[in-house]
Image (cartoon, rainbow, N blue to C red; front, side):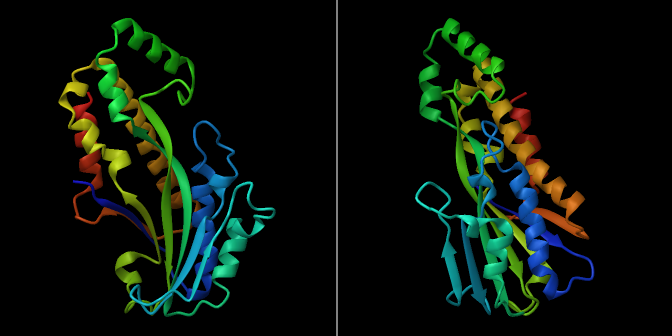
Length: 253
């Protein structure tokens, strides 16, 4: 069953006034690796897509909310630059509020129908396709079995009085990755017929590993560059993510 995935971050001797700077630091690390393998310099992937401020707890209506347009529809999208978006959203932030920012990255997702049709393709066709993928670093243009899709990541910064000091459990900053599907691929790995095909299995292993590498690269970058005192990568069910990842990859070996 799919599970919600989170990263909680705590900072040493943390003061509420330092929350905007801490958020900027974490968002910058995400921006460094959020461009797709096809286009690492994708400017839109380095921008904030939405910002929201919640008072008291999450049952209250937001006091601030903004969606940013980061494409050709906007004549000036400078407000979505990380530093500008954080400054605007936190301008009137109080210690009983939480602020949330959304950004996106591109993760590999399987085309299960395409995989099923590939099982009836000739060995020559599969060999030719996989050889083409190997000759291209991303494989994005030549790989009809997997697609890069944008996935929203949410970053929440908590005031010390928000939700009865919930930061003690959630972290001063909590990163919400959404469902853990891109990293464990339960639906894909439950397809026993697919896993009997060594070529498709090898491709699945490659794509899942690339998603895992993105997750680990961000987590380690935050640990190295953001001055945190501790971090916790966790799932809503409490099942250790590392065990799930190991179990899934073992099925592909």
